[in-house]
Image (cartoon, rainbow, N blue to C red; front, side, top):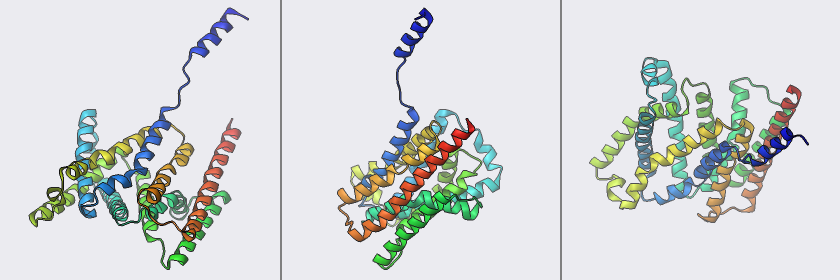
Amino acid sequence: MSIAHSAKITASSKRPCSMNPGIGYALAAYLLWGLLPIYLYLLAPVAATEILAHRIVWSLATMAILLVGLRRLQWIRTVLARPVVLGRFALTAALISVNWILYIWSINSGHVIDSSLGYFINPLVNVLLGALLLKERLRFGQKLPIVLAALGVAWLTWQAGAPPWIGLVLALSFSLYGLLRKTAALGALEGFTIEAALLTPLALGYLLWLAANGNLGFLNSSTQVRWLLVAAGPVTTVPLLLFAAGARRISFSLLGVLQYLAPTLQWLTGIFFFHEPFDPHKAIGFGFIWLALLLFAAEGAWFGWQRARYAA
């Protein structure tokens, strides 16, 4: 064995084996999103609309501190000079508000499992909207999961006597939000800051109105609840930052697999923490959807592997 080859082996043996940090960032983001129902449960004494208002105001405050610290403020002047961009972000702000208020209400009204359904079917709704609105062609391996998910939703509708509207509205609002943000002119952090800034005047006005009528939960609650409301800013922004950091470092396909961690944790939280019923009829409907997601993830991984193989 040559000295050079021996040195190469020695150097490689000393090289630390480390996991891609992007996986850790993404896992942390989805873990925090999956445990969000427990945080909202602690805010149960406060009305859902007030929680939403605090989430908006304190998120803007958190993002302002962050952007000032990073000295990332140059984009503001450019955005203010482009009303079309502001109009688009006004629409995304409205969509995320609908998503947030329904999610908060569902958690504090005993519908944790129903809300988890929305984020289970969200990837499939993304694909469906891409086909309907962006004219993207679907492969057979993408069509079959959508059909299976539709059967699951139809089963749940038939058993309950009404569509699972909480999950459907959450999935549709978040998918439309993602679709508009996909082609937005700003990055994740800047775009979210603009959305919070557009919503903050309404949120502050609502909080002042509640205070004037003596109905502000922030003033009428314990110190613990007040601090939890202030923490709505970091609770909202930290997972977003972790997600953005993870998305830049790992493949889109891996990110797509990891995203199922959040609704799975939420579903488990609904069963074991909130003790919500999960009868066999509901399990059958969810089973169709889980099977659809399994096939969807497997097909995406296979297609990505085949494309990489032929490109090599």
